[in-house]
Amino acid sequence: MINIIGLGYIGLPTALMFAKSGVKVVGTDYNVELVNSLNEGKLTFEEEGLEELFQAALSNGIEFTTEYQKSHTYIIAVPTPYIKENKKLDPKYVISAVNNVLNVCEKGASLIIESTISPGTIDKYVRPEIEKRGYVIGKDVHLLHAPERIIPGNMIYELEHNSRTIGADNSEIGDKIKGLYSSFCKAEIVVTDIRSAEMSKVVENTYRDINIAFANELAKICRTDDMDVYEIIRIANKHPRVNILKPGPGVGGHCISVDPWFLVGDYPDLTNLILTARKINDSMPTHVLGRIRDIMREHGIKDVSKVGLYGLTYKENVDDVRESPTLQLLEKMDEHLAFGVKVFDPFVKTRFVDHQFMNFEDFLNEIEILVLMVGHDHIKNNINIIKNKHVLDTNNICTFDGVYKL
Image (tube, rainbow, N blue to C red; front, top):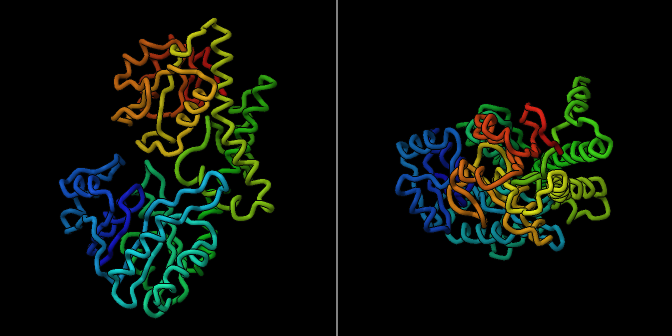
């Protein structure tokens, strides 16, 4: 039996996938409301294919509880925030989960940390926590790190088809856990040491952050000299060794916008490029704010309440709002005393911010400037009804004339 700790965006799909594959699973989360919802057969977030996976897991006897279970295998998938003041990882949730596991685990149990952590976290925080409890690592408990590699909007496919990394002190234990993940993962599973596993996950997301920052800097350069950044990137990417990602209104989510800070926090004197990329991407909501100001001036619009932001989530076709560029933009507007901007997102079904509309038509009727922050399929399917607005398209999804771009 596997006890999976943390039933959020990573832990829940992982638990369901193991259960569907025939592994006995108990999911644990401290959130009573979340656990009750799952026990009532109700999912706590939307994701394509998740409902079908949920039903399959329920059929195979998956259980949900707030209690840690006595088991030989644990997967820890709790949040790993960073401390904004010093950009370092805050390991408090991981440490708490590890201690709760130690209270109930069988001797020789494997503790697999899936949460994204900064390089060296297990050595700095987890090992000492275990050792001060009198446990011998490698005998009483086995430590492993298997960083998640999935993205909201495509979780189910990526759980099955993305390669995985298992970091372990002992290759024999690593191979054993590799076999466990092979119950559903069809891609290559690499077994390595723990620090390499820690570093590889952070490096993956940092690479993408730097690539996006390059695209965003290109967008700013092209804006100053009236060039089409999208056309330039399209042509440049025809080179076989060039793959520039697309610019956007900012970088959100709990991976790309957070993980690079772990390296900046731990290696402040060695991360000049990474820090610069983070600053560029974090500056994009301010760039969008400047573009809104330009459009307002051009059309003589002085009331910011005539501005509407489409999209609250950090990416298209998901309901995940963590670190979203729209929330960053709203914060910038608040700092500049720009109150009253309207907001709509078809995937966010509860009121999350002020002046948030639940009906798209009502939202459009209240605004003159429409800022497309997220390229949901919903807006792509409704392009024809926004042509009478002044549209700032930060995702390059509109093809009609008169659209403003980054």
